[in-house]
Amino acid sequence: MEVFKFGGASVKNAEGVKNISQIIQYHSSHPLLIVVSAMGKTTDALERLTKAYFEGLGSVHEIFEDIKTYHFQIAHELFSDGTNPVFDDISNTFVEIDWILEDEPFNFDYIYDQIVSVGELVSTKIVSHYLNYTGIKSQWADARNYIQTDNTYREGKVDWNKTRHLAEAQLLPLVQQQIVVTQGFIGSTSENFTTTLGREGSDYSAAIFASCLQASAVTIWKDVPGVLNADPKWFDHTELIPQLSYHDAIELAYYGATVIHPKTIKPLQNNNIPLHVRSFLKPDAAGTTIGHTEKPLRVPSFIFKVNQVLISILPKDFSFIIEENLSQIFDILHQHRIKVNTMLNSALSFSISVDHDEEKITKLIAALSVTYKVKYNKGMELVTIRYYDQQTIGRVTENKKVLLEVRSRHTCQMVMKDNIQAFE
Ligand SMILES: Nc1ncnc2c1ncn2[C@@H]1O[C@H](COP(=O)(O)OP(=O)(O)O)[C@@H](O)[C@H]1O
Ligand SMILES: N[C@@H](CC(=O)OP(=O)(O)O)C(=O)O
Image (cartoon, rainbow, N blue to C red; front, top):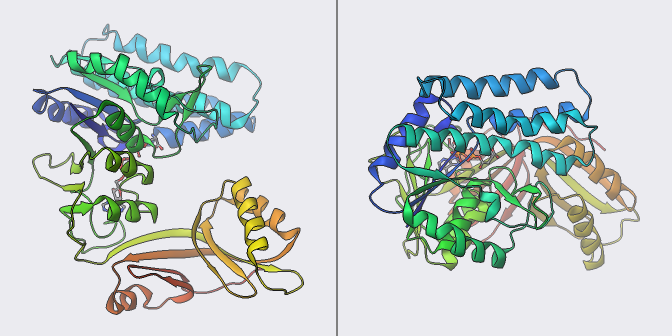
């Protein structure tokens, strides 16, 4: 059996749903598990809804109505028959949000997961109904019955033993009967509360299912021809990488190549399952295959991250940065759930580049400032070049001021900006 994953961009409208149905039909001669994300930018909209609800804003109902209208419009374009059971199914799924909104808000992360997960529930209902409507026999499955996590809401940690057991015992027999459509991104605690696996986590879901079911391959269908040596949103002249080792794929994803969620590769590598990245716009093209290959990447690959904050942390008494300080600093970073994108330490300071999440950063700086002198620069860019050379470094740093540079044998990272403004 194989696992196919379709992200939000592939099902952002009725045309998209029709397109992926054709892809599924073409491959339907062998068992398939289809993992689907929320439609288009629905997760962002549900996040806005959750925030508005917590802030008691009057826009809550307007945001919610827009989300519902978007899905019903897609369904009306797909199903000419207004009595199709899909319409009741969509309504019943959205009712879960109505119930939440009737109560007073409590525990943001928990409520976030209960609301935001509805995006995946409703998209998979539409896709599954549409496959059946067009004669492709399929059944809908609730990913929460299989993917078991702890109760770290918004970033559920997978309980692999339970998940493997449930997937093998209960999901595999279904997939062997007919095509199964399920959700990416969501799981469940042992008390049956919904969790999410972290933003963009549907690729990871596909890998979890594939590894638990010993799939022969995973294909993630994207709006790009495969893995390129840079994000085409940033660069004009990108090159397709036809074959990529698991190791290089992990490095690229880890440094922020958003084409693959960083957690996706390891479970596949551990089980020797190839990962194909292909275009849902050109489904006949081979794309990229990630697997065991000794072929090194021939072209330098770039990863850009904008909206970075460069934070320098110095002991208040100007003493040296020693292991004890580092351990305390990492503890504070961990408590604030901050992912460090790059770091460098010198005798007197420790510098990190992190994503600029205003709320988290304000709290982090306040916590660090108790013990340390903290300097920071907002609005920075972080570029990572895998397999760098001097010419490539020259190209990306043209007209930039580099504030921090870290190099290993294969990877060079630079934090930079056009005009520097220092804050203290
Ligand atoms: N190295 C890369 N190769 C290809 N695409 C990349 C790369 N780095 C970033 N991307 C971006 O990843 C996007 C596809 O990923 P994403 O939007 O998360 O898909 P989905 O929502 O379908 O999961 C592309 O549109 C592209 O802009
Ligand atoms: N819908 C979730 C999960 C996901 O992975 O979506 P996508 O496959 O569209 O990136 C999100 O936007 O975070």
